[in-house]
Each structure stands twice: as structure tokens, then as C-alpha cells.
Amino acid sequence: MNLEESIYETLGTLSIPFELQRHPPIFTWEDAQRIPRTDRGQHFKSLFLTPVRQCDPRPFFLLVICAEKRASLQDAARAANSPKLTFANPGALMECLGVTPGAVSPLALIHPGAQGVQLLLDSDIPTFEWVSFHPGVNTATVTMPQKCFQDYIGHTGHVPLWI
Image 1 (spheres, rainbow, N blue to C red):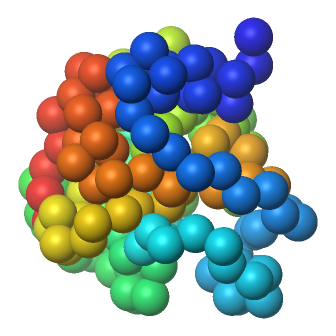
Image 2 (cartoon, one colour):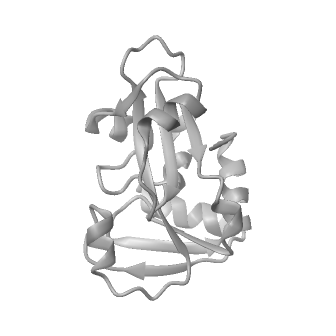
């Protein structure tokens, strides 16, 4: 079973209602804005990061912020009490989350390699009724109630830092 199928299975196991939209590949926020939306969820950017110097015992971070916000790696590092952060390489992304660039998503935290990833969540997430993320591929978007998203994250065993 591939990661996308595992995500749908996990959503079903947890009885999480969701909507699915298929679309052309999305690699950037600009790509996403060109696709007609059929969902009602708030969209987010997910960035897979690593410390510039590997002195931090947490080698990887997944930063999830509102799509309209500008990501500040400096602010993320400060909030995570970590040294300077940079984008992790595609090999580490595949090993830890089982996804390629453009498909990074907190839904991928069910991947077996994700256990050491520290999740950094935008503190605005609880203000939205519905949230939308890629399901391990950048050709689909899953929309679910925000409260159910938090249940999903709890199921992965990750304790987020709210920033």
C-alpha cells in the first residue's frame, strides 16, 4: 500500500470525514492559486526543515503555516529552540515522510520514518473550521474538519509545538 492509500485508510479507521479534490500537480502557492477550488478548507504550506548545524538532537522539523503567510525560518527556529533552520534535502524528505518536494504534508506523519520529526503548527489552525492538505501527493487535496485534523495528528504520536 502506498502512502496516499495509507492516509485514506487511516482517515477511515479514525472515522474522520473528508472531501477529496483531484487536480494538476501543485508545487508552489502560485500553482495552487491557479486551480479552481472546490473545497471549503483553509490551505497550508508544509515545509520540511533541518538545522544548518546538526547539533540539535531533533534532526528534522515539519513547519505547517497558513498558505498566505510568509514563512520565516528564523522565527521557526526560535520558536523550536533550535539553531538556524534550512530546507532538508529531497532524500531526507523521502526517508522521513515518504513524499517528494511539492507533496509535503502533516498527513504524511503516519509514515514509519516520521517518528523523529518535530511538528511545528501555525497557532491559527484552531481558528479554522476546515483545513486542507495534500494526502502524500501533490495531485490531490484532502479537506477535513480542523478538530479531526488534530485527532489525526494525535494518532501519529506527534506532539506539536504551536507557533
